[in-house]
Amino acid sequence: MGKSTKFVMTVAGVALAGVAGMGVAQASTTAHPADSGAPSSCRPANLTTKISSDAAGSGHRHYRVTLTAAPKTSPCQLAGSPRDVKFYDNGSLKGVTAKPYGPQGTKVTFGPGHPVHFDIQVPSASKGATANRVVFTLRTPGGGIIPGNQEADGKLSVDFGTQIGPVRPGA
Image (cartoon, one colour):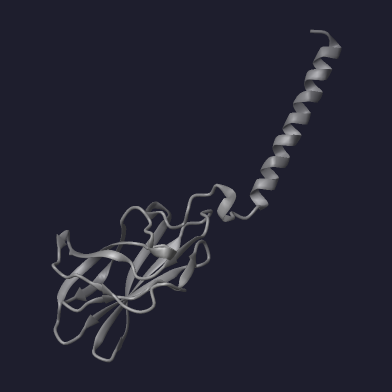
């Protein structure tokens, strides 16, 4: 190759590197909007959960299930109480079914920086059955579901008459 060919190739290489560098700088400062191609916060692999005791009220024990989105995921919409709720203790399914309570149509945005929670309300008339895992399916506005089971771990007790509240904003 002659000197002029090397010069042209070098100039082209520097130009491509500059364009690539601008793309990287641009991508790192852009937020992850819903249409960005970022994975959904609502997918089971893209969130973390925990169960904690909440304040008791008028004849009920309450447990809060908090969902936190992974960073760099896109926000999604949830609504209503989770469905297909199952309670387990060390892998053993408990025979307790839960019914929803409260308003089921309120849309809630879930994503990075926007945790959500729902309430598990258990009658306190008896000790109930010990559980350490809840498996559930999240719902979308309009009655749809998020594919895949979500799981949350933490100590709780459940009994007949257990109810599940709707998803609400905040931890």
